[in-house]
Length: 108
Image (tube, rainbow, N blue to C red; front, side):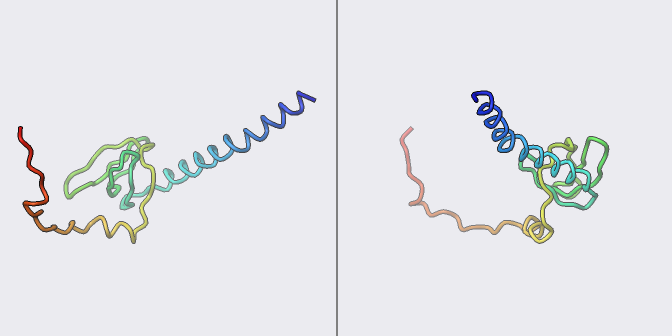
């Protein structure tokens, strides 16, 4: 009876922990296989860029005009939707200078 409980517990743990992780890994491998030049991606370190070239284990990301980074292919965590990628190209709006009273003066 105890062996049956142990086997059921192992089966539940397998279904809860291992199967979803295998699905995520398979989806990530498929996403990496679909990478093409021109795709806008995000790396696991948070770097946004457009794929300039795909090699066996390396991806060249263009992060600014004439600036490319050599990134391990496994570090690419997501392909960004083209609609969301348009927001990345816009320059951030210049905010007003903070008023002097917003800063707290300290005596050093």
